[in-house]
Length: 295
Image (cartoon, rainbow, N blue to C red):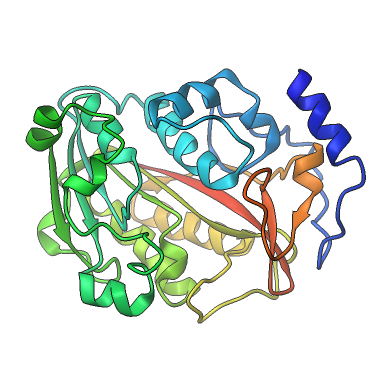
């Protein structure tokens, strides 16, 4: 409660957005929760739930109001809610970079295949220079989250292009995941195709959990065909329709939150902390999580 009051004082006069954040859903959809996640945006209220602090502890970070930290907590809570973080499950990760999730999964007894772009391609894309690329398996446990023997036994690693998922992975996994990766595949359509192809890697009853960039300002104009693209509500609804045709389901909550940090748009140079929405070119953007269940 004290933290919430401090944030309200700090952001009592929200910074103007480059384009206004859209009005909330007309059907009075309540704000999303981390306790019972669906496909939803990052909001301040979720970071004030006890689940958020718990998962921050599991990835060995102090809780902070930052959307990138939220992405890890969201993925973990979504998988926990669907009964995936138990021994014997098999997981496939895409574009894993140096994220801590593979180590958390292994600590919970999950067998993991983590993948990332081939080093030369990653170097050309700038991921190596910015320390966002995994060059080997050991780098995925650099926080010592999982004991080395268990990690070595349960985690495998291979190089793979997310635009060309290896055929031998189809139908093999209980869950798949990616954290803010598929917006970098070159276009909105490439990103949507990736999500669809990732679902093909699931067993029946499996879960795909992905996070990405969401355009809060417009459901029409957006950033496409670029190194980072911004997905709109209409893109996610198109994805939902396409997945339904192949026997998979999604549930959405497009409420963007109404607390002080939900209304604050960070502008370049971005702050290190307290960063839920930011300006990319002329759009207000936040992180959005997708949960897909294969029937």
